[in-house]
Every structure is written in C-alpha cells, then in structure tokens.
Image (cartoon, rainbow, N blue to C red):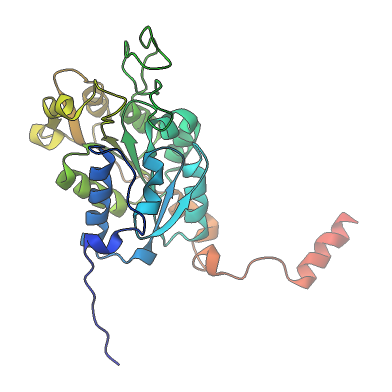
Length: 294
C-alpha cells in the first residue's frame, strides 16, 4: 500500500463561515497569518484545536478549518489548558482580544504563564472593546475618549509584554497585523516553542478606535531583530516593551527553556494522552475505597 503526501495551502484552512468583521479590521491579517503559518508547518486541520473567548476576534474559530471551541468571556485559557491536559499531543491555539484576555481573563493569563502550559496565545489587541461598540479596554491609552470615558481615560493601561514576562511566560512576542509575514513566523516559532507562548498583536479597530490606526503603527513600528535584541535578557525586553511613543517594537522580546507544565506533570510522563487512556477505578479498587470510608 502506498501513501500520497498531501501539501495543504492556507486556503485549506478556510472555515465554512466568512468573517463578519468590519472592512479594514486588523483581525483579517491575523487570520491570514494563522492559516499561512499552520499550512507551511505541514499541519492537517485535525492536528490543531483553536480556542477562543468572547469578542469580535473570538469569532475566529468559526473562520478557520481546525477543531474549535468558542467558550466563555475571559475563559479561553483555562478551557485550552483542559484540552492540553486531556491530549498533550494536540497543538492548541488560543485566540481573543485585549478585553477578553487582559481584562475579563487577566487572572487566567497570570496563572497560565506561571504554569508554563504549552499553549500558543494570539491576542488581537485593538485597545478598545469593539463588540460592545467602543468602550475603554485594559490597553486603552490614558486620555482616550470612548463611550465609557467621555472625559478621557484616566486609568493606566496594562502592558501585556512585561506582565507575561514577569509572570513566567517563556515565549513573549509582539506583532502588527498588517505585517502578515512577520506574524506568521512568530506564530510558527510560538507553536514550536515548548511552553506558554503569547503573541500580542496590534490589530486596529477601524470603527471604534480612530487613534491607534494602521497609519499610527506603520509610522512607529521597529523590529527588535534590527536592533540585535538578546531574547534571553528579560530586563532589556521589559524596557523596550514599555516604549510606546515614536518607537514601538515588534518581534520576540523574551524566550527561555524553562520546562513546560506537560514536561513536569507526572501523570503525563507515561501512558500517552489522557484522552486515549482507560480512566476510572476498577471494581476492586472502588470497593477498597468504600470499605475505608465505612
């Protein structure tokens, strides 16, 4: 019997539904980059699970041909962790927005990073709540006028890069949705990385954020690799991540080889994925527990 190798293209990862994002939305570039990245890596649709929360960007699992889960607001990371624990051989992508990931789900980001769960988290950061038509988000700049801040935002925005590094993420990167080539490369590197990978993507909202536009980023973006950045230097990584003026860096800020949760969890060391094991107690073991309780 002979087998035929099938080379898939990004079009083979197109979902059954077409995106309903606004024309010009940065999320189109992110979807394009993901499809390109997984096709170039030789994956099949059944090799990948894409998990999301709630928001415009969180509709993405419906637009890509992989296994998919559209979960609760801010709860994509714990759901994805459950998927990874059940089948640690599955490639798990997590997608969502800044409100979903850094606001509603901010606490889950902290604990996923410290556990170093082997997930690739792609956050479409438009610095606004888009689905609910334009409220201030955790990454909105000070002074930004929105429906919920008519006199300007007074709250300090979160810096997802420094937060991820300080909490233990072992692959931390930033991208711009208009640079699909760089983003696809970062996604591939994040998937290959053994541990928690987070890629914060500036993905402009053309409808409700008219400050942080495509042109805004095009004029300011500078790639870290052009500066010869050392990705093992977390201090310099944090310093460069905090720049948000005339220069805004993209690329890999930090990477380390700290063991992932899957590597150190004893239950996963032998026997293959839990999803394929016979679980539960046999009759004799169950009776022993009952006898002890009685």
